[in-house]
Image (cartoon, rainbow, N blue to C red; front, side, top):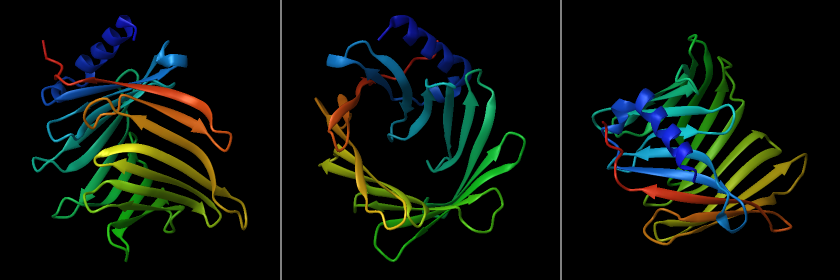
Length: 240
């Protein structure tokens, strides 16, 4: 990765997210690479605390942006702050949880105070399954529904979003212990359509639970669509 780009990234962190850096325990750079995982560009940078909770994410795709994650003293996420490339707040997520720390309502608010989306989450009849209903602005009827399934340890097994009865997108995840080794993207679009596999992403680990790189394949041709490298900086960035 270009050292100049790294310096620019860290300058952004110190200017806009300096208080959060005090709690940083590791930083992960995601790089989009060419053949042989060379000639890489930065996709995102993420910082995590000691409980492996994300503190911020900076996205480098245009328009560049960042998300800061704020937690209560009980380590429950209660707000996400979205900023543009200049560090100016654009919108926030206000997240409401029950006494166990499980969230049930997430309101996406524009900086003007206008409600953009409200997400309501509730358990289904199946164990470790949750339904999330998306309400656009103040519409009383949900515009989309999402079903997320977890295993007993809390790992996400599948994530399905339906925008209508016959327009759905589903991600399926596979694990080896705590390592996510594969994800699949399935989609259906149109009356009476059947799910069609669109993408496969395979993850490779060299040490621990942080992947070293991944390859995304376009299906059904199984052609390489993208290559990603993950650089782990396991020491916190020190405030100067």
